[in-house]
Each structure stands twice: as structure tokens, then as C-alpha cells.
Image (cartoon, rainbow, N blue to C red):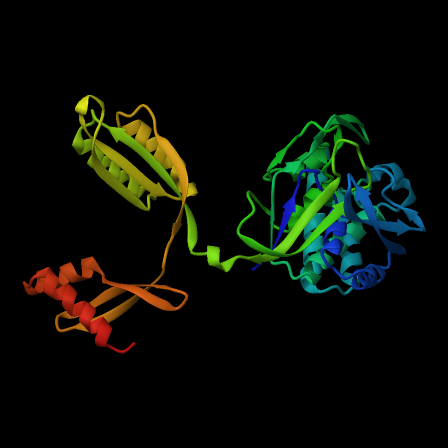
Length: 404
């Protein structure tokens, strides 16, 4: 699938995202056409600028021939524009006859913005008037970012942690610490940090767009980039490359078979073996992929048991608690490892004694392994009073000779 990966070390705003998408190849002409369709009497100005030595694209929305982003805060010039409610904005977007995914994304971003404002000010959603964000430039930024992502055929979004900046910001009702209240509300559930850079680096529009795109946060997955775009913020501070970098490409299908597993391990030399057996069963019940118990010799030549549990990130916490609570250990080793798995499928075969399943492992369409399902074979062996090994041989023979 096609993924966009955002580096958030300079924060993010609507115009930075738009600049990055244009730099990565979103067609400016069709974006201008989209802007015309919105009938906002606004133009899109695109220029190449230098930010700390990096060539980046600065996208500005011009209304009545002036730039809307001379200040990082939309509310300073809000009095130029009529206040718009969410219903007004919905009407405006639907009237523009945009492709459905573009309209849906844009409306979702505005709904998120509206909900954040409503929550911060303690008013119902329909009473929210977009003076802080609903000026023409925000409507244009949100719709154009949605349209640009659609044009680049981006299926999914992922981002590194977002730098929110620090210091204080002037809001309509006094000074607030960064991030401003509505922005803070929109950032819930996203991964953020502050590098200590003074100023507001994440705007409400930027945060709402990332949430509207269902952005997941974390390390960059295996990807093959075909486009990298740098979107410039409006300022060029000396201590920060004020750009949002967006890398677009296909997720690398050769890494699909590679999974990350969490390995939890502890060596026990003073623990009742019955308890160790109980812990192994509990670990599997809690979502462990596998539990290994290896006899080892420990210091003072004591016989011990090395308990190794393989699990995924989701279940690691519960298994860690289990090991610390149920065993006599004073500590665990935890590490993440890559594991490669064959693609697996199950095939049912017929034998003289009844049906049994075979697990088949393949990679890139090539069959590498076939193994009879142990429980099925054991059931047939018991029911027919014949050795298990004969049933297993027969099941495998039926698979090899049967219809492919």
C-alpha cells in the first residue's frame, strides 16, 4: 500500500502539509481548480524557499491578493472574514462537487476542529463559529491537503512524534501555554514532545488533518520511497529547520513476512517446577506465541530453568506482569527481535480412517513445508487403535498424492 511518512520535528500546520504534498508531486493546476470550485475568491501561491539551507515549497493561500499567513494565528485577521459555522462550511464543501474521499476527509477535519473548540469553550458544536480556524485560508488548506493526498493516491499515513514547541501563545481570551487549548485537545491520542523551541509549532489545522487521515504514530515502517517533499512553515527561525518532511512510497512487501516479536526471558533456580508449568500455561492463555523452558546451570552450579516467552507488543505488558507476579524472579530481560514466518494455509485431506488437516508453509508461491496437524492425527490414531506414526505418514501421503 502507498504510505506517507511525516517527520514532525518542526511541528505541522496546514500550509506545511500542503507545501510538502506539492513538493512531493501533487499537481498544482488541479489544486488551483479545486480552490476555484470552492468559490472562496482565493488563490494558491506556490514558491520555492530556503529553510535552514533546505529547499522547500511554501504554499500560501492569497485572499484579496494578500497572504493569510503573515501571522501564525488565524484569529488576528479573523475580522476580515465572515464567521462560519460547521453547517456553512459543510454546505460550501458539498457545493464544490469534490471527489467523495476528498470531501469526506475535509469535513472530518472540520468536525474535529469544531469538536475541539466546542469542548474547550463549553458550548454545543452547532454554536461554534470558526473565527480562529474558519477563515478562508483554513478552509482552503484543509480541502487542498485532502485533494493533494488523494491526487498522490496515499492509502495510509504514519508520523514520527510531533514537536509542539513551547512558551506561550496569545489566544482570544489571554495568554496560554503552548499548545493552545484547542490544539491540545486535537493532539490527544497523538505522540507529541517539546524540543524546547519557543513558539507554537503545531496548529489546530495541522493536528486536525493528521487525525482526519487516521495517522498512526511510530517508527518508519519498511518503505520504498518514490517522492519526498519538504513543506515550509511561514517563519524561518535560526534554531530550527522549519519544514515538514513527507516521504511517500510503497510499503516494502518483502518485509511483510517479517514480524517483530517481544522476547521476555528469566532464569529461575529456586522456583517450584509446578509453578513454572503453571506460568507457561498462563502465558499462552494471555497471548504468548510460544513458551520455551530450557534446563540451564546457574551460579553455584545450581540446576535452573530458563523461561523464554515469545509474544507481540500488545500482550507483552500482561506477560511481564505474570512473570514478575507468579515466579520468584527479581527481574526479566526483554528484547525485540525480528522473526520471519512462512505464509501458512491449511488443507484438509481424506484418509482411510477419516479427514485430517495439513499445515502448508510457503513463500513467494513456493511450497517449502507440509506438516500433518498433530491433534487430528492423534484423534484418528486413538479412535482406530493404530500407531500415531502410521496415521501421520498416511496423512502426508494423502496430501502429496491427492488433488493439488
